[in-house]
Structure formats: C-alpha cells, structure tokens
Length: 289
Image 1 (cartoon, rainbow, N blue to C red):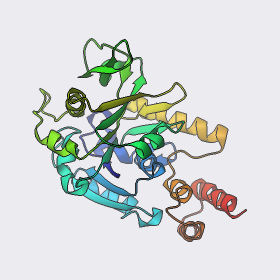
Image 2: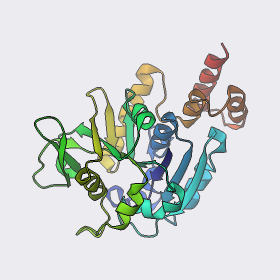
Image 3: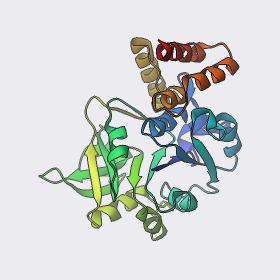
C-alpha cells in the first residue's frame, strides 16, 4: 500500500500564523505537525509516500523531509496549485497511486492509541475503509450515520443537523477505483471535490467499511488556533507522563525495520544536542541491550 500526505489547502483557519509558514509545518509541542501523520503511515508499514502541498510551501517540506531515505522510505512531492478539496489529491497523485491501494492522511490530523490503524492498513483487501470517532461537534466534520444493526447508512459533509455524533477522521483507505471515482465527482457548492462524496460512492457500491474507534483512541484535528494549542498540550502531557514521543519518524523507522540501529546512530551523530536527540539515543541504547 502507498500513502498520500495531504498538506495543501489555504490554512485560513490558522490565520495569521499561516501567513508565515504552512499549517502542517506549525509546531505541535516539540515537532512539526507533519511528523505526526507521517509517523502514522510509517508505523502502518507504508514506505512509499506522496506529499501534496502548495507551490509556496513545497520547498519547505523538501528541506524538512528530503526524499525520506534517512527513514528507509521514499517521499515524492506533488503540487496543489489551487485548494479544490481533499479528493483532488487522487487526481494530483494519480500516476503515483497506479493500480494499487492507497491511504490518504491529512497533514493536520494527529492520532494516538491502540493498533486500529496499523491493523486496518495490514488487513485492507479492497473497496474503502474509513473510521468513525465520537465528537461533541459533528457539524464541523464529515458525519457517518449507522443503522440499527451498526452498519453505515449515510454520510454528510458538515451538516447543519447531524444525524449522529460520529465524525470521520482524516485517514482513509481506498483501492485503485478511487482515482476514477474522484474524476467523476462534481464540485460541491464550496467549489471543492469532497472526500465525503468519494466515501458516499463507495457506500452506494456496497464497498465501504467503517470502523468505530474506541474511547481509548485519540484523534486531534489541529487546524485551528485552539485545536493546535490543545494538540500541543496533549502531546506534552503524554510525552511527560509516559516517557515516549509521539510523531517520531526515526523511532517508527527503527521499530518497523526500515533502518538499522547503526544507521540511526549515524543520523544521531549529525543532530544538534537537544531533547529530541537525547530521546533517540535512549531508543538506540534500548535496541543495543
């Protein structure tokens, strides 16, 4: 399976911060925001990744992430010239996707807890797989409704009167049909190709699987100033209390076997002295015991 990191969009909800730098490059506690969804893909075993960003921000992502070889992965880049919806990613990256399955993850979404996502990546066999997460403000998201037997029966994008409290987080798994489905979409009244319309088409075909994420799972959308602050506070709390780091691609690469501990040590030698390096040195020592 391949992965798409969607880091485009206007970032208008974070104005004026995004006048300086892309939303997905904003700090979430001690790391750039993009590190968190990137690590989710890597932890799920995905090694071929396409990052989509605006023409202005793409050079900054290249500077930060490079081609991914330091983590044993391959990162390619595509430009989103105009913010025309999440589903536009499948048209931009059609040549990258090819004939295989793909996971799209939003660059401003953070996930933590359990193994629901890695298991979904490993077991995916076709159609579409999305997730449902109980929230207090479903009108801000795509919303999935379930029937009396627990099956998804409808999907709406930011409804004024939501039919449930289950929002669809920003990680989606699709087979190769997604490219043709995206090509046939009609832009919404917002002028965007909506990801909810992609999911609705898979539902119509009887090929949509929805997994409800447990209460122990955390999903944070860091797309506003308030939620960005909340995400940073959450990450700081977890890291301080548990002594682990969230969104650490070096650790994910090592634990997944993408790189050796010897290669990690080589990269550590070039890092400046900082808390991040100290943490990774601890991981290296753990592997050498």
